[in-house]
Image (cartoon, rainbow, N blue to C red; front, side, top):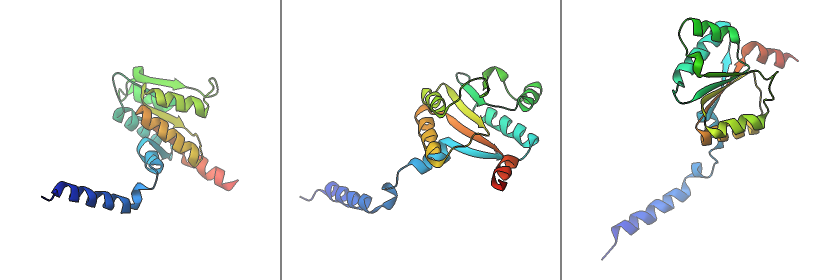
Length: 156
C-alpha cells in the first residue's frame, strides 16, 4: 500500500527548501509592520497624524505614549473632542532620560497600544531593534519626522 500523505509531505518539504524568502530574516518586514516612519509637512498635517494615530490605536486598557509631542496640536484635538487626553501619556525628553534602551524596554512591556516619537532619528539597526521590541510587546511605534528638519539636515 502506498502512503499518499508521505509523498505529499516529502514534496512539500522539498518545495520549502527551494523558497528563498524563508532564508531572509523577518527583520525588514517587522520595521514596516510595527515601526513606521511618518513624514509630517506642517502643523496641520501633524494634528491630522496625531488624530489618526490616537483614533486608530485607542484601547481602553492601554496608553498612547507620546515622546516630545507638540502640545498645541494635542490641545486643539482635545478641545475639539477628537481624542481622549486621559489615555495619552506625554514625556518630554528634556526633562526625562529617553534613551534607546528605555524605548525598547517600554515597547517590550506592552502597556501601550502605541508609542509616538517626535523627531527621533535612528539608524537601520536601531530601527530593527525597536521594531523587534514593538512586535514582542504588540505596541505600534511611530516615528514622526518633520519634513523641514529632514531638508535642513541634508543641507548641512
